[in-house]
Image 1 (tube, helix red, strand yellow):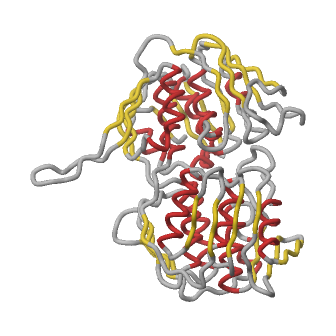
Image 2 (cartoon, one colour):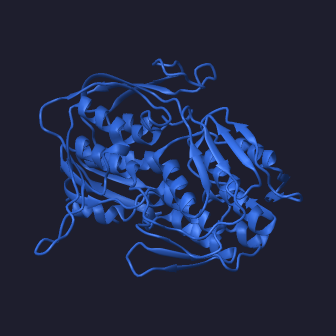
Image 3 (tube, helix red, strand yellow):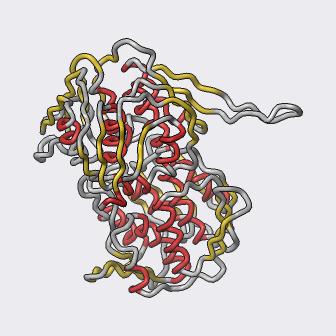
Amino acid sequence: MTDDVLVVHGGTPLEGRIRVRGAKNLVSKAMVAALLGDSPSRLFDVPKIRDVEVVRGLLGLHGVKVTDGGEDGELVFDPANVESASTDQINVHAGSSRIPILFCGPLLHRLGHAFIPDLGGCHIGPRPIDFHLQALREFGATVEKTPEGLHLSAPNGLHGTKFALPYPSVGATEQVLLTAVMAEGVTELRNAAVEPEIIDLICILQKMGAIIKVHTDRVIEIQGVPKLHGYTHRPIPDRIEAASWAAAALATRGHVEVLGAQQADMMTFLNIFRSVGGEYEVTDARPPKLGDPGQEGGIRFWHPGGELHAVALETDVHPGFMTDWQQPLVVALTQARGLSIVHETVYEQRLGYTEALNSMGANIQVYRDCLGGTPCRFGRRNFKHSAVIAGPSKLHAADLVIPDLRAGFSHLIAALAAEGTSRVYGVDLINRGYEDFEAKLADLGAHVERP
């Protein structure tokens, strides 16, 4: 399809400044949280990405009035008239996002029932909703599986419970939070995810009137309350997008300033970035004052010249190296001297994108063995989840087909770093998580065009 192709003339370093807005992995969950309030909510710095459009459509189907606010990127949610949506209407969104599963708790509180369509998302390995459904049943929900999706009800209401996740799943932790805040009694969640986006969601729920305690050792305690009100919130910036542009600067031997990027949420990435040989500088925000418009803070990333260094890294849940960081960074590692090792411990099928990099001249071998010491769920289950990258490799142009969101941006980085002209197919998938990325590429001096 010619309207879903980007022609990339590679070999030019990216140079310039771009800005990241609210984190994709928080904003959509904040939108769902607005369902729980009995008054309007206001969310700032919302990126214009497809996942936001999907959630906005689902909220509208359930009677939530969503309007644009006065500030660019501001959304206002009025949940005064929450209502049931027809199965046919909801099914329009089937397969377009995994966010609908998080509607369960809020809809059970507001309506007493919920319907969830078939779920979509990126094809990086099964992300079962078993944890979600088990948690909802613990709260007292009944779940009926039908060919078109899931029908849930709570005939006796939802009640607090003690629940331990077998793995600190981000999605399941969000499910418990969004359900427990208005469930009767106290909920204790053990082995919870504690990613920055989770903590920011807790901040939102606390603003709404929730009582949530974050204890040590991944334990979260939620005391249910009978009602919640709306919130006003500016989300944390997208640390995945920030790291993606950083990797692009390194792979293309460029210099990119990412306004909005925050050091605290990216410390693990920054350590690896520096170990590879990249340089960065944190720029603090300067508030406006008389005669000075001020300046937004961020992080400048650049390739200082010379050789990059091979590293060994393992993905892990926070505060480990984020799984969404490894794909863009691996492109830069193809330019590092020596053997780099990547052990993926979060998703079992997240190294398939390396085949495309090899077709461009990279030298990457994938293995079923655990090439690292981090406890891993996949070592004896026949998944190729470790990679060895030999470099440096001279990348050349190729025709690429994007399989999923993060791999798509990695393919794009590879095309930008390669000599010659590449055609990247399925590029619109990148719009799921990267706002206005073509305009940002233009701002950074990239030579790209639609055919």
